[in-house]
Image (cartoon, rainbow, N blue to C red):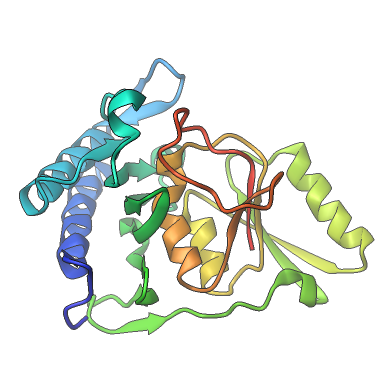
Length: 263
C-alpha cells in the first residue's frame, strides 16, 4: 500500500504491528500451550498475553499520546476515559476458543475510535493469512499474501433486496434468537443459507459480500467488535443496535455491546 494515512496515523505501520503480533501468536499456536481460565470464565493463553504486549508497546512507541483499551489490560475508570477524544481499542486474540481448538478462525483486532466511532480497523487472521483494513475516508481493503496488493471491498446490496440470503453466525455461540431470525427470513419467502465462522471474521465476510447479514443476539464487548465494525462500515455496511437501529457506539460506561446486526 502506498502511504495509507488517516489524519497523522500511518496505517502501514499499524499493519506491521499486527503482523508482529501475529508472529508471536503463531509461535504459541504451533506448540502445546496451557490455558488459564479468567475470573469471567473466559480462556486465556500465553498467545493473548504476548500479542497484547507486542501491540501495546508498538502503539505506545508510535503514538504515545493516544490511550489504549485492551481486553487484557485493567480498564481505565470511566471518569477518566469518558473525556478521551480518541483511543486505541484492541483485542489481542478474538476467538480464543477457536485458537484453542486450532481451527484457525481467530483474529488480532486493532481499532482507533474517535468520538465513539471506529475510524480505523485492522482484523488479522494469522493462521489463515488474511488481513482486512478499513479506514474512514479510505475504504476497506483485503490484503493479499504479500501485503502489498489489495482489493477494495464494496458490495452493499442489502439482504432485504435479495431472494437468497447468506446469514453468518458464530461457530461457538449460536443463540435461539439467531435461529428465530433465520426462521423469520424463511417465513418472508427468502431462501437462506447459513454460514458459520469464528471471531470477528463474521463481520469481514459481510464486508466482502461472502455473507449478507450477521445477526449477533448474544453478549460481546466493545473490543470484540471495534476493528471489524470499521472493516464493515467502510465497505458500505452498517453495524446497528438490534433494538434501536442506531449505529453501535464505543467508550460507553459499560463496555458490553447491545445485540446488533451487521447488514
